[in-house]
Length: 259
Image 1 (tube, rainbow, N blue to C red):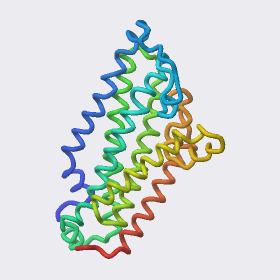
Image 2: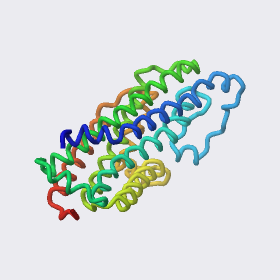
Image 3: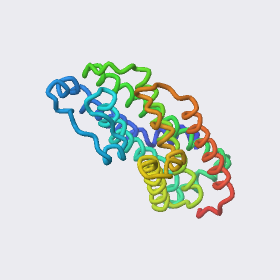
Image 4: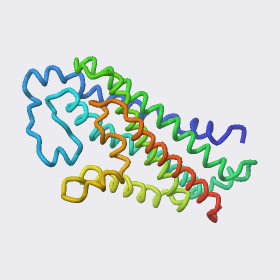
């Protein structure tokens, strides 16, 4: 093998990365440039209800509420999470397809192999998050939304770290199971459980504590579009990534591989 696992992974997945980047760049431009005209028409005077709150949506008539509802709460979060789970789960597929033995036949340890896969995932997540952020800023300027760019970057940083958390947990599941189907299924369940814990926690008496168990809370719970950066919340997400990577390295190193 003439390339490292890191560079080989980036090369093999470059087309998918380009496609996802284009898709994430399109989403904000579908909604944000129309904000000013929709606001003037009164089309955004939508009454809030419990369902909107549970989905993390805000006041549509305000610039921050509209951006949060149309870009961050649903489409942006969903697409970034699907991206992270899909790209991370491909690591498990190599064992299913029988190509993992070719990699391990090279002078590389299991831990180094998995660490380079994680590095590739982190770079890819950073790329699509950056494209997404730049598109949001461009769309916000076109829609005259007057939201500070720093707050948009803060919100996107939290969302990017959330995607990396879910992607790293997917790597951990793949390291434990070695099966793509199981990895995708369990990763989807983990993401759904975290989403529900954040959005439904606090709606009933005595359930507020559930939100603090969810990475969604630390990514968007402090309303970064309004309040800007929250270093403590971002540090929690980074810590979860570090712990998940460490656990994945140990699991992959100790598991009997089907090669």
